[in-house]
Length: 208
Image 1 (cartoon, rainbow, N blue to C red):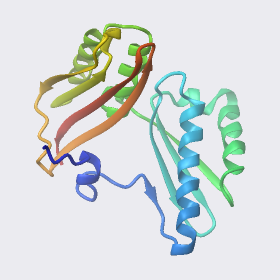
Image 2 (cartoon, one colour):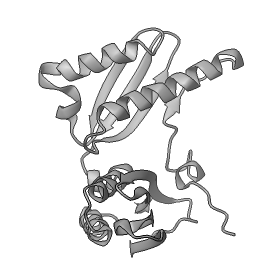
Image 3 (spheres, rainbow, N blue to C red):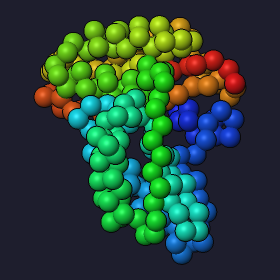
């Protein structure tokens, strides 16, 4: 059996950072943890039509919760004259106790973000595109964007086949055992007419 470790948690404090940054006494921990999950679910649900959200960072201090949304399309999140961000803030204030600040950051190269690549492949599979074509287009665009390597695994009833199977595609090198290596990873569950198809993406961007 392989000893599988999540590449993100494996590299915490080396080339990766926590997506939630806060400290609280034990009696309040559960409350803030559930709040974090609700915040992420609400934001993901709001922009689920197209893969645009790359990362959601949550930072808490004594009297302020800062939510940082990294996105490939900042205009879609902010909305016309800031209407979208104001509506989102109103929805989040119903979940979070205390004042909120929302920062929106634009992702310069979405092809180098594992979450966006995995969700884009899943979105195309949901539109009945051939899985080989969808994955190979993603591999090509990521390598053209400057990645050192990319690995994609898709598993499930591929192309609506009767039997589920797993397919793996690798371009370049992806050194998962090297801690210095900056490897981005994401696992996405794509709904298709034949059931759920799992999409895993590893992107190697070089050493840090």
